[in-house]
Image 1: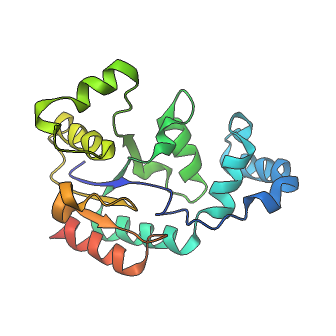
Image 2: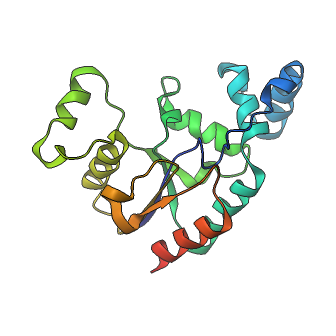
Amino acid sequence: MEKVIFLDIDGVLQPPTQTRFKHIKEVDELKKQLYDKYGVDYNEYHDYDILAVYYDWDKEAIAELKRILGATGAKIVISSDWRAYKDNPLKCMRDFFRIYDLADYVIDYTPLWRGAEREEHYRRKEYKDIHEPRVVEILEHLKIHPEIKKWVAVDDLHLGEYLKENAVLTRYKLAKADADKCIEILNG
């Protein structure tokens, strides 16, 4: 795990446009098709989330993500708020990414702290000037995993102030220019 993409979902894979609600009547058939194809029981997930992954995740953004992964050999660490989904975030994210044949690339997610534990991390002296929780979560993940040698954070949040050249800011979705920059960072 030398190369990692810290991946947000909303604004990276899922642009603001949403078509999932048009397909609510199709959800049972979709879950059946996905079960037949992948052997995953998607009934454990909320219908709108399955529809979001299937219909709202942008196919061009997914293609660009696949291009990054193929060109760099990187793996995915989920930094998106989607990682707070369900009791087993890694299984959930792998199940969602399986729909695009990317499950094997999803290896982890950034720390997910709640309550007092969350406050404890954000009050640390080393993070006192960081006002974006996602940055702290990424930095903590890097501390825990020194085997990560090259990394990039792909997000629609402005993380560059803190993560400098390792941050790639998307606008609505992951585009070709964003993917090119990710490849340059990870292979540079």
